[in-house]
Amino acid sequence: MEDKTVFISLGRRKDAIARVRMFPGTGIITVNDQAVDVYFNRETDRIIVKQPLLLTNTMTKFDITGNTCGGGITGQAGALRLGIARALIQSDPELKDMLRKHGFLTRDPRAKERKKYGQKGARKRFQWTKR
Image (cartoon, rainbow, N blue to C red; front, side):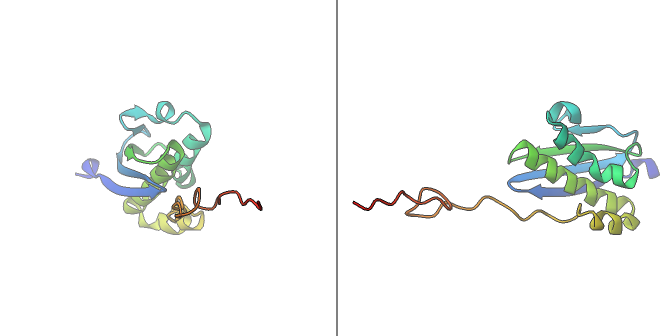
């Protein structure tokens, strides 16, 4: 019965949403039915995804399947990191303090600011002419 345990969590960043399923295994990470090294081209994105696992020394204990949508690749990596951290807490509540201290449980609230009427963008104004 212990082998069938599945931890399900959700992570968000900007417009990206990541649904994470984590279960006991050998450390295989799959994102949208692709290996994590194939899906995330940039090394920084791969590092972001693996940070909670490296911190808690659980890299080879769990297999992770992530389903991401929306936003860009880096936003999806951040959403996946939050989802993995939340799933790790479900598996072992004692990891919560360590993950919280390193900021992996904080949802990044920054998002795109909306365009304002009468302006070119969120902050940019039309050029002022004297004459």
